[in-house]
Length: 156
Length: 91
Image 1: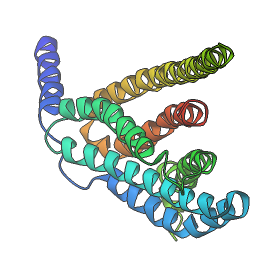
Image 2: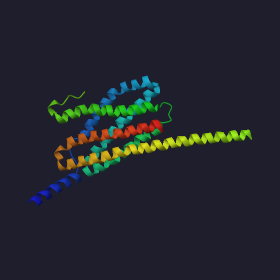
Image 3: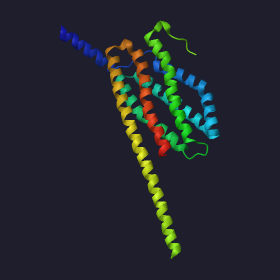
Image 4: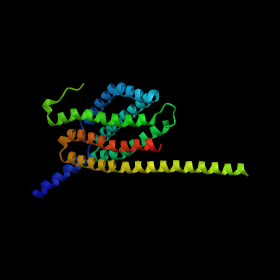
């Protein structure tokens, strides 16, 4: 009987690995929130870049913010799309997606590195600040939602 | 003869500058590659464990996916920091 239970349990796990997850995709919701917040704080970040690095800094800051938001959107789309097919495919897609997205970011920066309007310090700073800032901001809501569903804060 | 020696000196200087720039770019690229290895291992471990959790308990998949996505993004920040160092030093 115990062997039968173990066999059923293994079958269920295998089925879950080879079949997809249906239902809403939470990462898409999280990404939409982050993109909305990113667009809200973008003028402030661009203004700070403009004050520190001038017009080139403002343009580079806008470019960096756009890069990060597109990067988040690509990651979410990749996970949501492949999770519907199978968990195994999702795992592979996330790992290769990491490499592909890094390559795309490199390409996006490499193509504009000699442009007249680019300021690499502004671009680099904006990339790190936007990425970590948006994640930290989102974590506040996700952590509260997961730990205390009844205290789920309202989203701006 | 003097003009010729000036020409050779200028060529040597140009060659030394080019070598220095190439070495800086190669070092920065190497550092970026090293910086990408750690997050790659981290993301692999994170996603593997998440898939295992979802396979064992599909009803918790939504919570696991949310946490996994944020974990991936935080881990990827390390690679982005390496990338920014790369573009500031070597690009």
